Amino acid sequence: MSMTDTLPDTAAQTAEGLPDKGGPAQPLLIVKDMQKYFPVRGGIFGRTQAMVQAVDGVSFEVKKGETLGIVGESGCGKSTTARLLIGLTEKDSGEIIFDGQGVGDSLSLRDLRRGVQMVFQDSYASLNPRLTIEESIAFGARVQGLSDPIGRAHSLMERVGLAPERFAQRYPHEVSGGQRQRINIARALAMSPRLVVLDEAVSALDKSVEAQVLNLLADLREEFGLTYIFISHDLNVVRYISDRILVMYLGEVVEVGPVNSIWEDQAHPYTRSLFSAMPSMDPENRTKTPPLTGDPPNPINPPSGCRFHTRCRFVDTVCKEKAPALRELPGRGGHCAACHLHDPDSGHDKAGREDIW
Image (cartoon, rainbow, N blue to C red; front, side, top):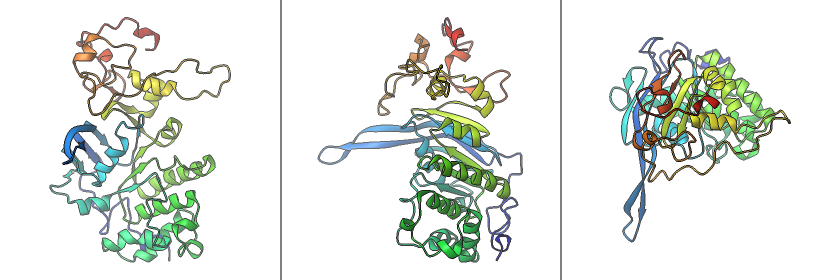
């Protein structure tokens, strides 16, 4: 049985997929002021004593067919953002619009799951150890009532490089880490999604296997007309697969723009620090001083104003008092940054910035 016999045309999104309602110009995903705080409980009665501000006012768009890379330090809110997008964690406030339909309003969570799927970092923990590979891939399609879930599973196994006659009846502990991640990719595609969220999907793989999975993801995006949100700590991997990069710091978006624009000229001091921390392959150009010192502030009680000002070398009075807005930089083709250095009306003393900008 061929793949085209069992899978719907994902690019066109026919009867079994979530239909394309907004047209090519409509962003596939729009996130507006999304917020999520987690309570910190203590005492005899387990009362809420504080709130961890994991995601605080995050807004961005993802265009159809593109790959948006999300980067930032551990604890900045990347994975929480991913879980909020697919409904695994309930947001406190904000709006998520999928192809013109508000999630929770005109679009139910069940329907969203047919349009958005996720590939997790831990390839073993995300699979049910009691289900065979065949059953794991077919499970979601069976629950959603899609046609021929087993045939769909076998076709996708072939597409991701796993022969059904060898792997269909195996269990997750009987395959390697790279093979398990291919299973997770096939399981996500079994729902005929239009958006796939990849949360550190290649970080636990050997470099040779990582390259194979990245090439597979690129081929699948082209073949099925997919859109990706790709979360990673590896900036080189993000550059390879992404069209745009979004940088998060302490639950907020500090910079977003085309991958080449950010790679060549970072507009935010935090982004510049991230890129400066990349190891150089030139033995004559070693990093002698750390580009960024200190730990991120406590997300329970983040700093006032710009949250990066406690670690920024260009901090000024306005940075401590007023949070910068995410604004588009002139002549940068959609490159935006949240920094008072780029706001002519902020009153920031810009003396000394010429050494990096």
